[in-house]
Image (cartoon, helix red, strand yellow):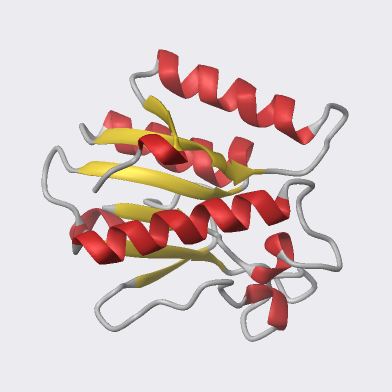
Length: 165
């Protein structure tokens, strides 16, 4: 399953996108096209921010950048872990393989991936298809640190060109 986390306009389109927004959005579009062409299930996770957040439900920033097609579930969440208080776990068979991409590397991507691993799922995090904002360090360093942590926790890290569904 391709799991797309928080692929929302508030982070992947101006006025305040993540630094690598163009390349990350293109990588996600490539993964999405490959998964759909192969008949691989796709699930979307969408963050529901508070009323003053750029991803408050119903606002332009809350909208997904790429549109789900019929049969692709959209799971709304309010916590960084996409499994917490959602039905994501109900969509997965035991020991499912998740190909993960999305926003933000050190928050929702990290938490969701760690929970998936703890639940016995296989996780492949796609390098270049997840990102975050600069925060005292350049965003690409933060994302690389998350990749190292997840790899040491049992996730596979792969480039977009290595992903085949």
